[in-house]
Length: 138
Image 1 (cartoon, helix red, strand yellow):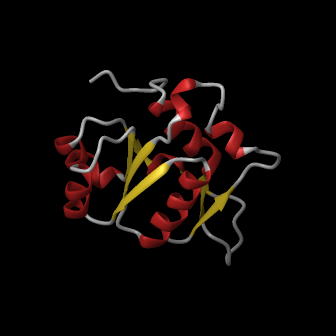
Image 2 (image 1 turned 90 degrees about the horizontal axis):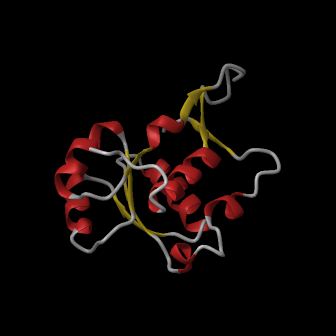
Image 3 (image 1 turned 135 degrees about the vertical axis):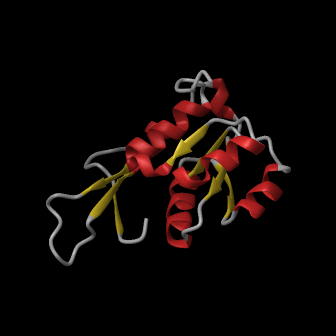
């Protein structure tokens, strides 16, 4: 996610979209394991998830991920395409691939980032998988 610009949709109330305070599932703090090798991306996503009231454990390598997974359970794992196979070999938690929320920014100027990150959609997906709204069947 180097050179990625983080966007928040105008008028978007991210905190409201992340946590439904009347939902008994969200009453307890949800646990997310963030497994990314890019430190800037990890910092940005850690902040976004924490802002939504989630407890985040970060791992910057598969070895750190294995150590952190022992401290689980986790409601969701956030990682990249390259690490999904390794994550699935260790945990059965739902996985959110952060790369699916990175898009080319066609209106980017030569000095601006060439991609953008859809923060609102990412946070909505993490919340949905933790509430069993979006899960793979296999």
